[in-house]
Image (cartoon, rainbow, N blue to C red; front, top):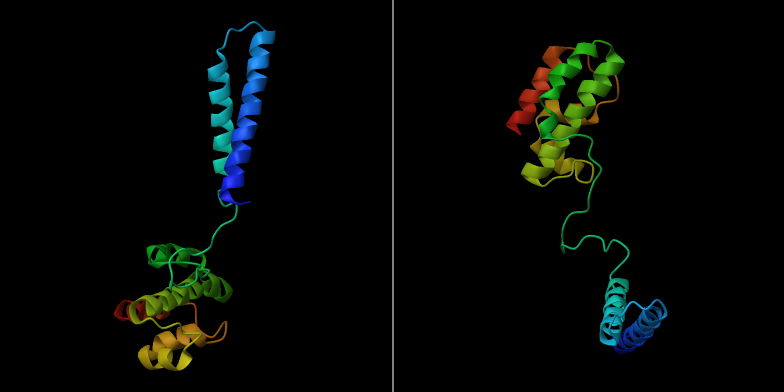
Length: 162
């Protein structure tokens, strides 16, 4: 709906609502002045008109040329939790889920932040700029690494150098 017809409709509905207020005031002998009822009706309908013109859906990314949001399982704030994850990670399957996967996410995030490289979209550039230890961390198949603190420490040191 265009702006002027919307305003005219709101004003007309406001006057009608104000008239209903006047009628109720007279019916119940409330003594509310006519002007107050009419202005009150116009304010209510004007506010409703303004609110109905607001967008009801998310407009998406408002910043032009920004990167799309990605699903992220962890961040560098989670690095301190890696040590606590070792408590139950002696099993190779748990080591994979609790230690290797979060460290791989951290390495990928740091590569993206520091070098502006997405390792999945630009694997050649990523392999050139990464330490071989980190490249193996990101690309090796599940269950490839032993569940050991030394292995995790080498990954953490390589991530810190990145």
